[in-house]
Length: 85
Length: 246
Image 1 (cartoon, rainbow over the protein chains, first blue to last red):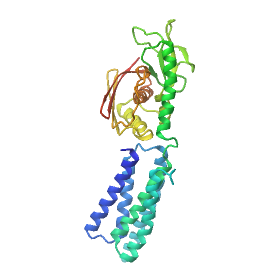
Image 2 (image 1 turned 90 degrees about the vertical axis):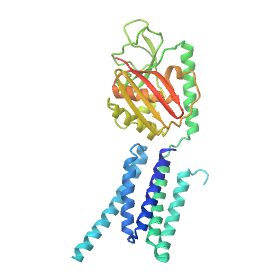
Image 3 (image 1 turned 180 degrees about the horizontal axis):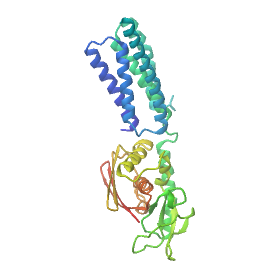
Image 4 (image 1 turned 120 degrees about the vertical axis):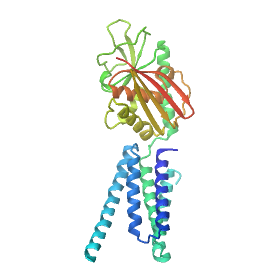
């Protein structure tokens, strides 16, 4: 199996598993799912250190965008907590 | 549509399915879990499309034909010269800025000692004796070393990382690589090998393409000449024994 296939299968497996586990625990907040997806994506991309340099640059760019989204979710949560307090 | 790679087709399908399904699951079905699954499909689709953009533009079969044509020409030249000595893989510091392999024209009783940088010519004299003449050739390994963004270091772990980056990453012909060093020898074990090669005569001189890559990267990392002592194939495993020269 090629490196790209293994990477895609790993991502698909992680996303499916985390969705199943979170759904089984009755999680009903979309931001919780998205946060887990972002973390899984960053970890999986980091583990596949030997990807082609061009692929790595493109995937890193996606990682930056997702990390930006992750930070937005956290900021919104912090604002929500502060407002609640 | 036929020119599109499998990654492009899968990526486009996942992206489209996710974009359509996410609002339906969220607003109509009211299921957060299914919406999340649709969004993960969007992310997977985007990743597959990006991977498709970084695929090599030359098909693997065409690359194989070019490799074999180049090696056939080199084999004809070497055979004509009547050479049967094993190639010595030189680091770029000893072979004019690019890693190359030196094939001595005369079999010497002992390994030749190469202490100075050789000129960028095809036929070079590498020692003080009149018989110290050899052919300096570019090998599959020589062409692969520039793919490394930084030169490898001499530690086993650094050589292993460099070889994995080339064989498992850039070339995608193996799953994993292990390197062990021991008193003038380096053993490179390549696991999950996916490169099928015909048994060409030139491999007795240069080693197989993967062994050639291993020798070139190790020579570059150690900054010393190396030769391929032996190679062992067992299923999808290849073990290459390299001898490090002075």
